[in-house]
Length: 572
Image (cartoon, helix red, strand yellow):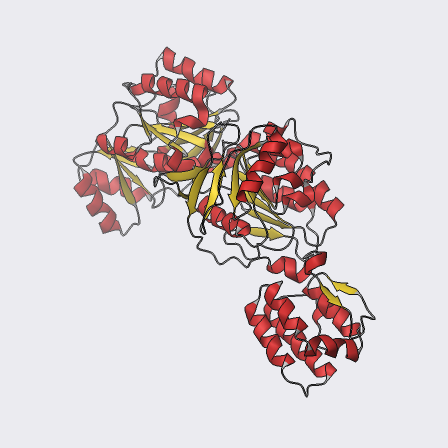
């Protein structure tokens, strides 16, 4: 299930003239039996509500007084979500002839046409209060208190995301409720302004409209919501149509050669997740996501993430998490991912979050031919984005869970052929996409691939900075200290190792590579850091520098660009 809760208004929505019909109550019971939560969000005061609906146990939480009071029917607990107004407010309203007046634990309510007297009284007493209208009723509340704030408090209690809740209402004070939910519905008798604000306008009124919504929710779940509201905008198709990724579609595979823009696209997608209030978790094996906005990070280049800390953050905090596994060996990374798969699958079933899990360099931890311990079956994996060089490098159970393939660059046709071969289906005939585009393919749909022109990310992604500082760029791309007579063959897999090895080689070996321009060439063509390459080339051109001084200057240039352990990058 994607939508795990229904939040319903009472008067005019569930109830007609204050009464909820037997048919509506039966629909609500069916929804509960489907495993979903029920929340009642109303402007009524709790004693009045208990009189009208004596058995509130059908609801997991009741938000009363238009967001000011939270009630737990199972325990009888009542919790104020705002401070009560001063007694002088009710007294002064009565003196002005305002009536009838109803005072709850927080809310003070009356009726039109007394709004002018209410405003004058609030101003006269110097109070900071707001007025909320509800089909002729006037509710006086502290600022910021509304049905949305009450809904969020109730969902927080239940550890649910607002994105996984459907809300339904009928009146002016339901605008905030609908906007705070993942899918907004209005019954047929709703005011026109609310209908215009809703994602779904039901064909029936009052409780019958809620029953209509329940039937749709049980039958279609996430498909009742507009694609544009929950999809992540990726770009546009050849006809200008919007292309989106939806969290209920299944997993996504982003594939292409190094440097093609895979991680940049992943960063762009996290921006869109943040915009839509989707929670995500990034598995970052090479430090490619430092300082990602709106995230909390665990682990770094020197310190391995603690599994318990990561799980605690996922379970107990509404955060976006980046788990940096640079300091872990490959076996430990795979163990961590297996544990996270289990945890996120369980957490997602209970709470709907995290909505996405992003696994960079996925072939490292989910390699072809390996035994993958998946939660349940492959289809139970949380909606994931796997980033890799080639599908052939990935474990087969993972590939079978993929519903969308995004292929980059000149290798895109090969990537789709590789994916088709792994799945045992016919490969599509396609050409490589032009710059700024990728191929979108849903292998199980039977539809041909589509060329998508990408949107540009807003954040500046530091491309592979972590990999080049502390990861492994590969044997062919490593720096090899050999010396003038090839008397050495020492490999530096990254910048940290480069500096450590440079400190130990002889002056003759160091100067040989310096005078040949090898350092600036490596920085330019492998590290892809033009600024560092230019600085190194300037040092290489100073022929009178001693070996120790040139070592010190190049080390200083690297330190300026990359944070590194003190023992590796200490001033030499």
